[in-house]
Image (cartoon, rainbow, N blue to C red; front, side, top):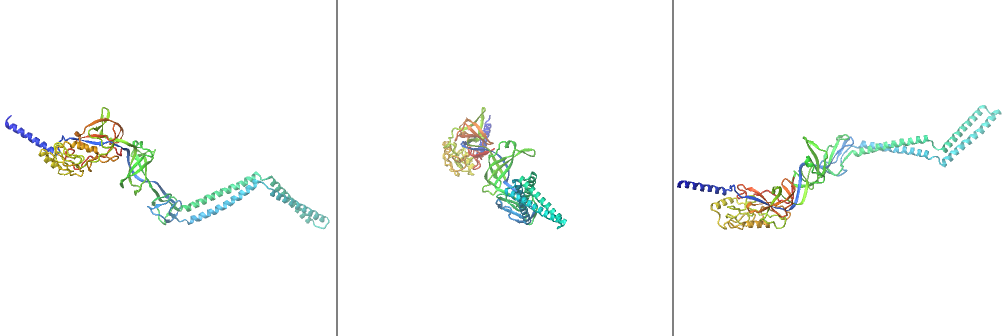
Length: 570
């Protein structure tokens, strides 16, 4: 091969290296290092929910009607008013009703008197004669006999004078007639006396009892009529059946109404409910007493506590799909909730306290065994379950957690550039990429030439280019939970903590077999295998240009919440 050919090949090689360097300067190196997410495992609460939606309705609502016909004389309330139990809402003219009530009251008094008389007569017959009655009867009999004897003597004297010619025959006939009347009086007195001594007959008692029964029936009818008349007078006024809100009032003064016509609607808004429809698989996991989290579209920032208060055993068919009505009750608290507002309900079917949870994607299967990668060279934070206080801008590097430092052969994240040297983090400085390019063109910054970190994360700046202590610094800050006030892990104890992204080649990890428990779409409970404070590793594929390797959007990070805290999922 000639000298000219060798020169041409050399030029091609130099050009290729230049292109490669340019692509690396722009963060377009396809071989950019993969990253790893680190999560701290700690105890917390996990909820599994069924999410559904419906409309708010009062737990108690009653439609009121007029029980009597008439003309509306008064309207005493306005829709929207808070009304008390028994409060008058509207009243019809009751003058005619009062007259009917008074007439019914008079009829009742007369019926009561008739019944009292019939009962007294029956009692007399049933009890029989007393000594006074017998004595009076005997006196009447003796008087009848004495009268008969006197009439007989007068007849004998009168008829004797006729025989002597001193009286006429007609006088004797009149005297005889008087004797016959006396004899009848005696027989009548004797019969009455005998009947008195014998007592009342069955027929007499039966008749007397019949008169009592008839009087009692008439009295009951009179009472019913009076009760109806009194009810009509009371029903002329429509009243609230319980304390609540007057939702509707359907009449105005002067309206003619009929019995049964709608008058008003009263609802108790102090307790509300949502009726939702659930499918067969969901309703099988729902039962009365389960808690629920309620959000109302009109108040998106407020979450209300609810409870399942009813599960219908009867299905409904909606477009051919079998659904079951479920009622969730709630209290509105201080919110001005209204009937009909749209609301969402997350019914909690499972709640586990003080459990360890990890992202579901952290679990791998090796040889049929579930395992999780646990970091060995990133120590557990101080205190089991303590969160990581975020090393934010200037503390955690760009490409996933924040533009914490320039990367020219290595990413400066926690204070000092990685091997290869470069400008120290600019806290999301838009000129960071230009700085990296200049450093790359110069073949790397001189030792100690890193620019001080200026991000709000407050990470230590001025790191020496190629400082071999950078990795140790990151690990130490990870363990201590410190590093600034920027974006990163937050929380200690019960505070939620988020993930942190680091180069995958900085993490040494091992596979730990675990036993899985309850899971959601994104989380899983670790029943055995992990301890609070363990740091788990989730490796991610190599970042795209401007990602984990440098030049990422200032402050960009994985949108992840803490794990091990309170979570809801389906």
